[in-house]
Image (tube, rainbow, N blue to C red; front, side, top):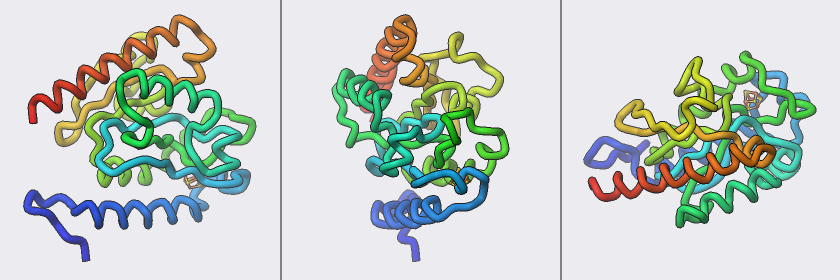
Amino acid sequence: MDQKTETGALSSKDQHSQLVGLHAQIEACSQCRLCETRTHAVPGEGVLNPQILFVGEAPGAQEDKLGRPFIGRSGRFLDGMIQGIGLRREETFITNVVKCRPPDNRDPRPDEVSACKAYLDRQIEWLAPRVVVTLGRFSMQRWFRGERITKIHGQAVEFGTGQIAVPLFHPAAALRNPQWRAAFAEDMQIVRRLLEKLAGSE
Ligand code: SF4
């Protein structure tokens, strides 16, 4: 049975076992057509109660091959940006809106995003991140429906029980466009200041 802390939250041990169970479920999931073409589902990786939960779009070819998120060129870029604000990848959690690779890197379809939504819901609940950083327009849509990333990147909003989401460009887009790359670096500094402010208010 789950052990609750005095505040009613799950203990770290239970958070961890819930997450391990969820990730096993994701790895065996066949709730949408993407299960037919994936090599590995990619649940995500990182720590419980991360400083930042990064939510990207979908696994790419490298990620599908190894079952790990953001490990190709975009991943190296993201790792560098995380280091740029004084954190390590291991202090964050990294996942995607859909956990299986769409064939030929096409965009995830609405029914696939919807089929996978409950997994991200549970991850957000159990990971209890300080700040959620959305990477690109697909994850942005969850918190900033109908908005344009070029207009609202770097602007934080509060949701749920005091958690904060900040939309950023997708690392792959930032790598393609020098202007967006600079914006990504600036937005990460906004995230850094936000984390400092949250730590100061504890
Ligand atoms: S994308 Fe999500 S819903 Fe679809 S098969 Fe993979 S884990 Fe299941």
